[in-house]
Image 1 (cartoon, helix red, strand yellow):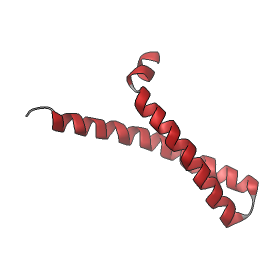
Image 2 (cartoon, one colour; image 1 turned 180 degrees about the vertical axis):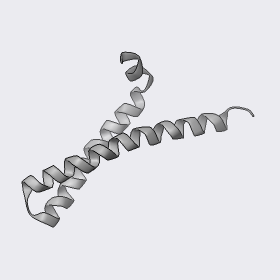
Image 3 (tube, one colour; image 1 turned 90 degrees about the vertical axis):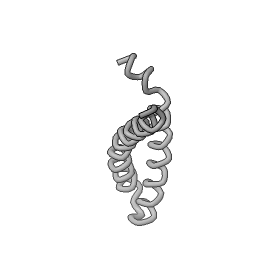
Length: 73
């Protein structure tokens, strides 16, 4: 597991940062729509958590695309 973290540290840090921003925005939007703090917190944790996992794998795919484009054919 430590090897995985070291190999993906930059992407994991970027994912964590994105996750925090996404939760904050989602909580504010959910509160504006519902007016209910508990409901807004619940909604804001569910969707961004799924998005964070998707974002991590999205970044890994793009790293491979960039590497493939950079290597001579």
